[in-house]
Length: 112
Image (cartoon, rainbow, N blue to C red; front, side, top):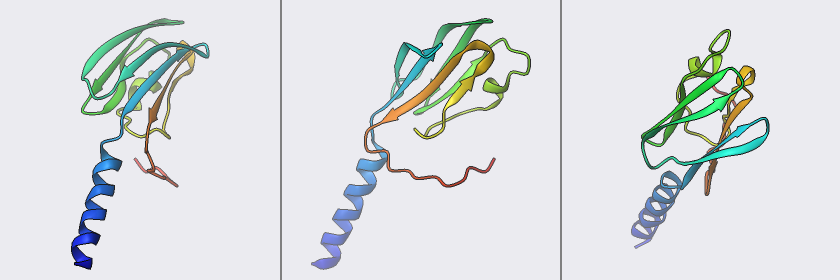
């Protein structure tokens, strides 16, 4: 009986933590310009200082697919899926932050 209760509790915790609602908030010069439901795949275009910034959402992950900047660092950054990792495109004054309810994923270090 105890093992069944423990199994049920663990399964509930895993399901609720992996199915949290994620919304990506895109800001331009610190002002919100777009909110993206990350459960829906799609491509979005926002105006940056140097031109269009193309944002792609796929499988609950987000990335800057294409942008114009001297080193293209924000598009090189790749896919992001956790709320604690922003995408920052300084030359275009664009920042993308993920907001997630119940996102308890605690990272001390990121290795790529």
